[in-house]
Image (tube, rainbow, N blue to C red; front, side, top):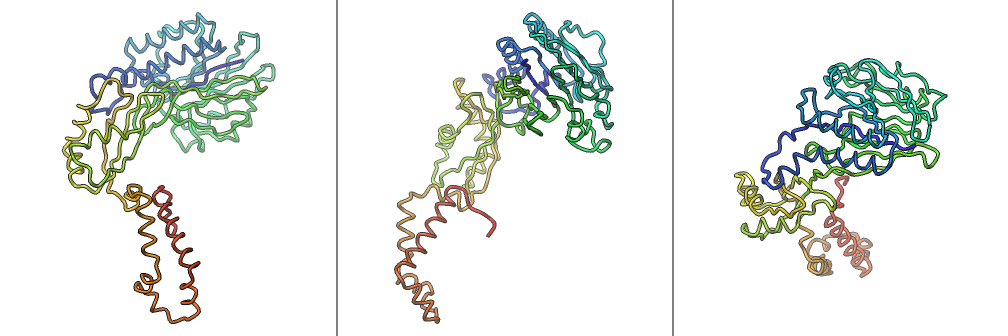
Length: 401
């Protein structure tokens, strides 16, 4: 038996808040959610899965235009042609969709009841009986103890799978169907497909309880690769494997600028040193670390952002949509020093004459003075300082001391 677990697809999300985007990138970004969903459907067919499980927020909101509904309908029809069944619940974002009685979903789509737990028994392509239990939101917030309504595992089924759109917490003390792992485990299900949290997160390995995260990151706080879980029972237990389908990833990067960088070279330097993502188009929030007031001014007046937009190319696999400024720390400057330079400087400091001039001659304890005058001790101190400089240069310094 094989299925896809995909939460929080948010079809119809408008990517509110994006700015400074060149024309060549706008369509790619605006279509990212649909593209990710289409990739999921294509994968489901290619993998010949039995079910696609959608635990809430398939849609970004309740006010759906015809194109958004058509996107979902076409996908469900494709899955039907491949004999793939869809089990879904509506969440806190698309709860109003569940109030519409006229959505033309094909008969391979099973929407679980709103406001109360419903169970469905379906057959896999290999004749295995699988029970699905879950609920759709009837309003935006649910404070009640929904887990108390879930039945115990159906012993007649090969597998029992729970769909749950909510968050960890105490019933009555949260707005999104708060639950506990203890209560979930008491049902003895084989897999809990969670939705609502947009971060991929495993709450328990076996039986699996966790979030697949959302299918496509929607803003700069939802960084990294996004996708779904492809789950099978090849090992005798239901285990998932993450599949990345989001065509756009949000990244946060930091770039330390050299002190002598000419303003006219700034855009080219940034373009040469941005990392981006190896697999997907990246929208980057870039923090520039510098103590150059000229650069701070270029950021404040928008001139640098405008220059980066002008220099962007359609073949780029990334775009810097947001710039921030960080005052450089001392250790930020250390990587710019050639290793030979600072090693020479350290060696020059740790000479007997220099140490005496710096205060060693003030030591009145003869035994302690003798200890410091040994060549081995001087070498030991020099080595310790060198290691500290290397640690700072790698960004591994600690504030503990």
